[in-house]
Figure 1 (tube, rainbow, N blue to C red):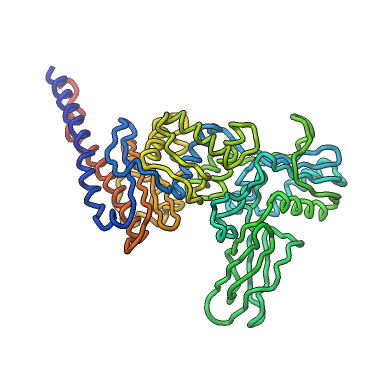
Figure 2: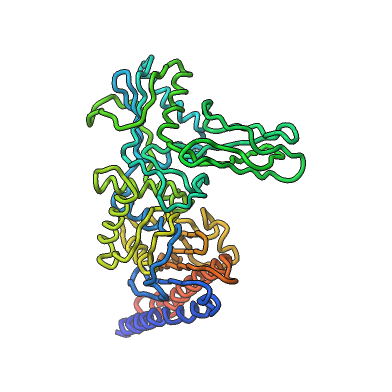
Length: 496
């Protein structure tokens, strides 16, 4: 009887502690948010206990704000929800008589240099896989090499993406056949003083002529950048080259299906299999028809990790278009992808999810609008999902260790683990994710800051975000310690 009463008292103390902890956190967070911050930015914050669903803190949580790359949390979650954790993008090379079809699946990981490096191969090795498959099928000529990218539409660039950024690596076009992140790697090295540098490119594309540009210098530092004329592959080199570049300077490429077709046709011809014609379009091969020569897969876990941990925009946009295709059966597009995301939001969060504006999947567009409440509730829905939750959580960067958070939280002492997604566009800084206590408890948070202006800097906003996350971590640690102190039964001898 005494033991039973003691346990009831311990449980009562625990309940009282949990009810007080959010109030303590509110005081701590309010002290972190200075008046100057509220006057020079618009803030939306929500913090939710994933086990109980209790909101620990909210401030401006219903404001519709620009999420920047926090949009990827919605995109990746919806993709996981609609495609499932066993989904894989599959790019097939199919023989149809003397024709060859490269059937795209919208895979953003196809030819991704970082993924190839992890496998110990390069882009030429991947192209060789397709060439070897044609050789093993004893093909001696190819009448037509068709690149079928019809799984997605032809609107490869969202109309609200900044026009001036379309040559930059984070604004790559999105196609039903992506390759090499839809980027060209350029390696300049010096020539004679005052002369244009020598240029080497990857993938090797002999037909792509880059005119002389830039200048070789003997003093100073390398300062090369590349431009590309809109809707073309006319690329120019600018800046100065003093020493050879070991890390590539990158520029986006236009019309990757056609570019990939020319790459593969060139490699086939070099291997003694001439290609009479290269084209793009939808193949006429019936379902189950043709001879599949090889299949290249990228598992969804890999795609989610590149999307969230490394914040690759191409991965997010490919997921968005792919769920549009999965839901409608029509070519994946920004519009069908947005409809699919809305469907997933409605299924998981109910009517409250209607308050969201979806422009793209990566957050590159400034037309997206999401509330901190919706983001936090979305994260809670996955933390409570035994089937999908761990896959999404594992795709997020770890504070101070991996991905886009590797250089953050350096001066913040944490007892638990923080897995989160950062986001930035001009005037916007967001951070949303989870604090995971050593005992496995999880709290979801979303800290969205828009309209950063005046003397307030993005660095200061990041410090605020990290301070709030540290406060959550402290409260969770205190809760665990209080439970241990409040329950003497665990330490009592058996039979007491």
